Image 1: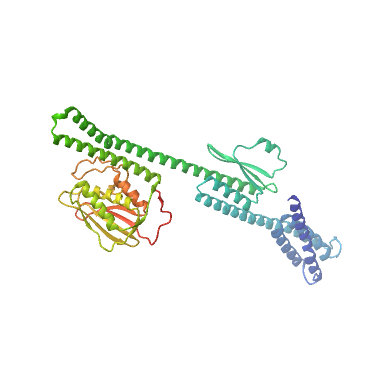
Image 2 (image 1 turned 135 degrees about the vertical axis):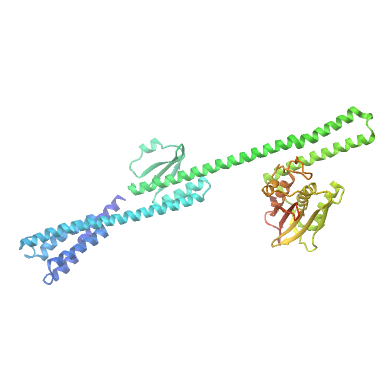
Length: 478
């Protein structure tokens, strides 16, 4: 590299000297027709061109060469350095001074232009680096991009990221200044040591750009680390929130039926024959109902954990929405032993590609929730419709209207609404709607809440329509 630099410098000086030959030859041929001022201007023009093109050193060589060529070939007496007229000697001295100053000015302009181009290149490289870093989310990608930029833009021959500090033995074994060690660090944190090797010692601008690239990489690594910490913190916060809600649900929704079962069984054991057959039957029925509630609540907790873990398996087939809604109506009738819902699905409802059992579960949770808040004098209305690309099941309740700020929250796990169907405090754990939303979203659908005309809440389930089996539908993740 040093040899190539010396060869380039010698070539510049040689080219500067050679350019004087044709110019001087041309002026020699017309020296009787031109004046000394013409000679001076032409030589100064040549010196300016050389200064801009080749730099200050070759321009000064051209200025000195022009001075002697001017004196030797173009001023009488010819072919000697003697000057016949003393005034011409003044002209020559002024010419040499002007040529020297012009060469320096032109060379300075050349250096400024080169510096401006270098700064523009540095800004371009740093902008490319920072914009690329902003899109990356893994430390490995940051290191790969940094190595690529240093190799392509800074012509680094080797880029190695050392996990620890600068090795003293490696620095002592260094025989030249072609290798640079830089810490990838931010205040209070070191991500490693960057070892960069060049073919020749880097100049000041390249070292400055190398340092800027290293700082950008360290800041990008810090950003990714902070984002990961924030994500972990958010995950822990969410887990803590769910744990608190779960404990609240267990403390009430589990303890209440357990207390009722215990008291009922205790009454059966202690009172015994003093109870009438009807009273004993009522206590047995209470125990069975509360155990069913416990079983349903535990099942809901297990289903919710599977949904949140992405372990819900869908067994999809083409199913009729009318049959699914009919199964939901039958389930509601078994629970209430009364006609609490009205079905009004159009006959032209298209089939959907879904898991029949899970979709019945989701719609049942929504319908049972609507029936719980439905006034005794009215019925929940279940209708169907089609929108572009999806089929919709609409479940209309005519009870209390849900406030706008609660419409999205009632679909969250463990959320407890402010009023129940009778206007009292709601003590339900709030898992049914969350499970329904998880099942619907696992099918690629949507669930949202709107207002019922005249008062109440309307739940809309939108399921996608497809012409074939969706890819990767075996397992749904949330």
